[in-house]
Image (cartoon, rainbow, N blue to C red; front, top):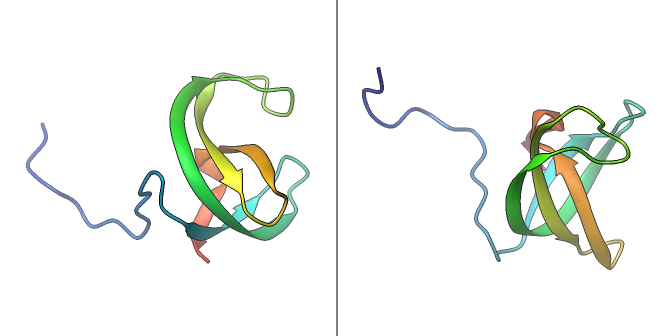
Length: 76
C-alpha cells in the first residue's frame, strides 16, 4: 500500500549536473560528478546480475559510465 511521498536523501534529476559517493564493484569508494542520462534495468560486464542501473555522463572522466543504484551511497 502506497500512502504518499517518503523522505528521500538522494534525488536524481536527469540532464542536470549532480554528484554522489559511489562504491564500485571492487568495493572502492569515490566521489562522482555526473549528468544522469537514463535509468535502466539490466546487467553489465561488472554487474552480471540484473539490477537497476543509472547511465550518466561522467564529468571527470569525460565519458559515459553506468552505476549500480544499490552502490550510490550519499550525496557527494
